[in-house]
Image 1 (cartoon, rainbow, N blue to C red):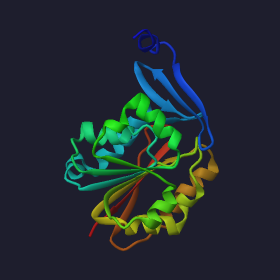
Image 2 (image 1 turned 30 degrees about the horizontal axis):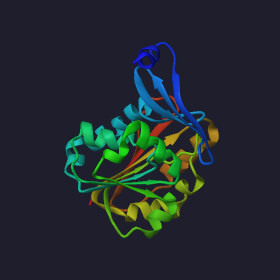
Image 3 (image 1 turned 90 degrees about the vertical axis):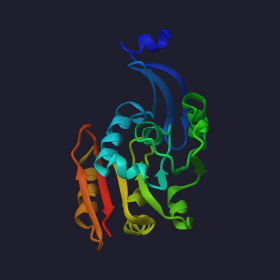
Length: 221
């Protein structure tokens, strides 16, 4: 309790370990709540959770509530999963794909994600998973970060096209990106301006967090 109170004055680290994927996995008390961070950015809960919640609102809570199967690429501490369940009252299936088994161990210990019975965790590379899966999804959330870096394959046309193929009619893709320099800004601009698929729309959600931008793709047929 003391750490929680003191965290309103300054962050307090309760767990830290090195990570080959994210440089480090840290669990901190910040402003009275536990959050998960990598070395240089927020991974789960805190500002990121609120930011992704804005994207879910753009899709529509009622629409999400009636979905059957959601895919989350990049689980970390599963804050977006808890938003979907707790704030939207979603009762359907959630498949979460995470490449870093250690981060799931930490998330189980500090955020009890193993108690989310409708969540199936798959330890796998997101690229490999979307190639192999035979399921289709109502909502696909792409939140793939290695510290502040997004793996390059996420911007490749093949990956984008495959993810779109996995989307059910009237489904949506919510892609969380980070913009720290002109190169990353250009990647997003190219991704958006070069996108054309019949029966799909693409747009960005106005930035609230300085360095994050959400890209929303929706299937309209």
